[in-house]
Length: 293
Image 1 (cartoon, rainbow, N blue to C red):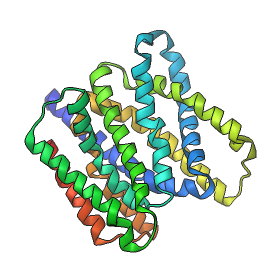
Image 2 (cartoon, helix red, strand yellow; image 1 turned 30 degrees about the vertical axis):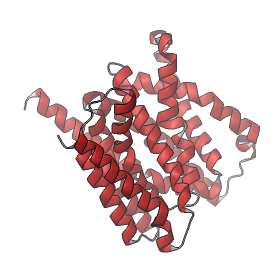
Image 3 (tube, rainbow, N blue to C red; image 1 turned 60 degrees about the vertical axis):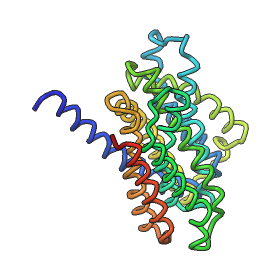
Image 4 (tube, rainbow, N blue to C red; image 1 turned 60 degrees about the horizontal axis):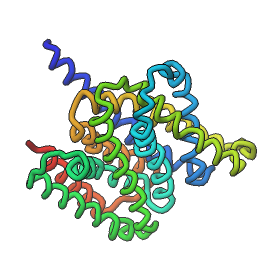
């Protein structure tokens, strides 16, 4: 087996593993919201992840290129800081299944942001793919939740803001940190966004007022899993995938995330209608056109 084949197999393995981890994130956010507010869930997730990354930050401290402090900060904010708040807020009103479906718009925004800000090549078929994908997204926002008479579909926009952040993050990593060790990149970016989360939790009294009971314990367990697997491990693996493949291929992990999210939602008793499957089909078809050579 040649080196290219090995790289492709490893990339595919990372792709599948990330799909499983991130596809499970939405149900974990749902469980975390039982015991905490959306802002507490986000801040705790960022804080726990930053604590895990901090020893590695110390390891790479002397190697930090301080002239790149802004790109490092942007990677932290767009990759985890902002989305960590957007998804719990969105899932206050929409189901974890729908959040997973909407997350599949990430490749669309990755390509769109690449064209606008990173001088990616413009191709008409890909532009058509963007329009189709955005149409499918609009269907979910305007009609999705109303089909099963629950939630406020406008909260889907918070998920879209999160996917726009992810699309921005991928392009920054590919263009600025192509040669940076993924663990180093993750450790630095998370250490930069960790202190504000700690300050918020301290001022809000969350850290001092937590009273463990069955509900809170389940929520904390969900946040810990989100932090360790859904953030720490997956962030390092994803940066590695972005460096070894293309931005669009890496973002196409969103193909399988909705499947995992819908499965978890179904097992948890969530309802899903034909409009959700139609919207997801349009989004994924649009993503396929974007990736099509």
